[in-house]
Length: 386
Image (tube, rainbow, N blue to C red):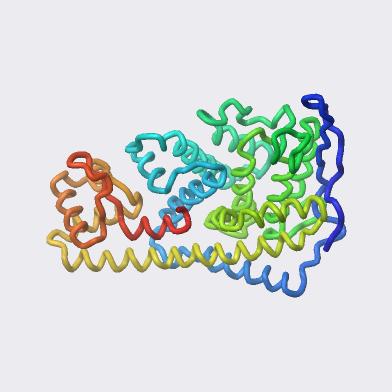
């Protein structure tokens, strides 16, 4: 449905001698009301079924927290890649093991801060802290704590005008609200997230709130990453999912041009239904992919455990090393010693046996300080990140 522009154009303070025409979005929900019927309703229902199936992943895995820990890191890599970082999931895992080196360290610090911010947000929600502008500012302060972006007002809404596309506001593709409008825009968004003035189904709410946040663009940097983070946070906050296992960065990355086109269509034409069709399909596909990954991991863990029980000379030690690698897919002998409480020779013997079996691969190519990766685990986790 084409409703016309979903905001008003207002002059901002002149910049560089140019009059800036900024876009200030109307309050949510849309008016006229959304039309979720026909094919769109079928997509919506399919997305909800896929979310429900993914939310039951605890029936597959002995420890859902392991899956969550690593999926948050996969999302951190993907969301940061959209912003231009070059880090891989292996880079992040090596960084957290304190084994990263070289030119990738700056990028991987950015990725690590994204994971820290997302975990902080989920922890705050679990404590009962409301999803709010205050919480988003907390996440922003973590995201831009140091290095790149640390000079972009971490933890504070911007006090200057920004723009999207182009070399200046005068030729920009889109100019978000001026700074003096941010407090009101974010207050309106916060009320909508908390079902004021009317209740909105959670999946629809997440879809609309993501666009609204990206349109407001309240920070000087980090808006894209926080906007993507907002989606699982709304789902968890509203109880649609127990754990934040659904992340759309891989879908947005694969369909990047379409994603930006639809954001602009919402702003200029009010075509929320076209955006919802894209969003629901992304949720369905992503949830199905995440469930398939969880099932593949569960099958792999069980198969490898059985092989170690039958073929290892010291199955008890090998199984303890195997359990440690499930928690962290890249480790060295020292970290495995700390995780298992076993001696270095015992750990080395278990790792060597797993290497012979093809479960573990040596990653560093060094004679000393070797790094070992749980080969198939890394392959499953890294799908879609290259």
